[in-house]
Every structure is written in C-alpha cells, then in structure tokens.
Image 1: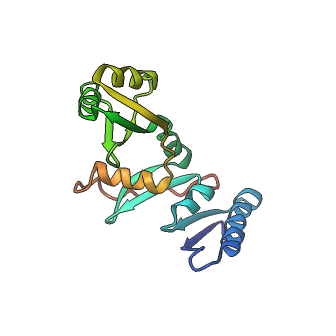
Image 2: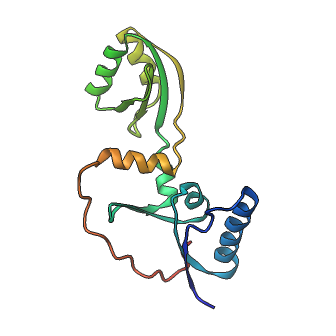
Image 3: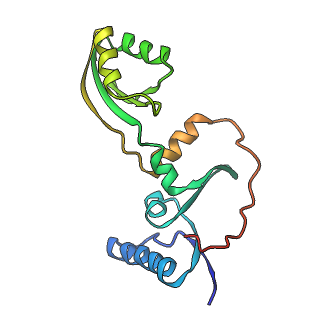
Length: 173
C-alpha cells in the first residue's frame, strides 16, 4: 500500500464521465485513505479541484510554490472593467496611483487593486478623468490565468534554482 502516488496526466484522453470518476477517486484516496499524490498535468482545473499545494514549473524552474487556496485568494481583488470615454486619462490616473492594470480588449481593463482600496475609488477616478465605467465585475481567474499572469510578470527571467520539496509529514494532495 504505497503512501505516495505519482500520477502523470491521469485524466488525459478520458471522456467527461471518466474524468469526473478519476477526480473523485483522487479525492477519496486523499481524504478517506490518507494517500498523498503528486499530480503532473496541464489541466490546471484538475489541480485546482484536487490539490492542496500547487507547484508551477516553467522551463525546468519553480515559478511558484503555494497552497492552492492562496493562489485562489490572489485573485480576490482582481477586476474586469469596461471603460468608455477618455480611457487614456483614466489609465494614466491608475498608473499614478500604482494600480496594476492591463488592457485586455479595446475598452476592457483588467486590474488588481491593493487590499486597502475599494472599487468606489475607480468610479471616482473615472468621473475625474472623463471616463465612464459601464461594467465592473470580479475577474475570476482560474489557475490557468494565474499561470499566464506569473509568466507575464517574469517572461525572460530565471526565477531561481529548482527547489527540492521536502517529503510531507502529513498527507498532501
């Protein structure tokens, strides 16, 4: 009865019902049988559903190693805004306040507010700059978007030497 399972793309090639059965099996092995597993996959939704810790590798280097829940919480202050009017002045004001933003589409701005800022500030800034926010909604990143955001933050940098992960004392899944 091995305490640690190594799984390489366990849902690859499965139909939706088979995929669901495999993910349920992994959850059962972890919660009811105390098994730990290392799941190697490109299907980051599977990681989000089944793993407590996520390690993101890029070009053989550890780009990120965090609890999956922490990665989810990083997106809590992320928003998608549709802005009309003088969007350049609005974006300049965001930069002055050191608010991270990115133009996703012609009038769609993605941003992450610092924890201390509330969304009402965005409406005030828009009003001051002659812009109009016609839509504001949370930008619900999944792990795939988090992965791409991490790549965008350090596209050509070496993030560090690969890290040897300690064998967990408690079951990790």
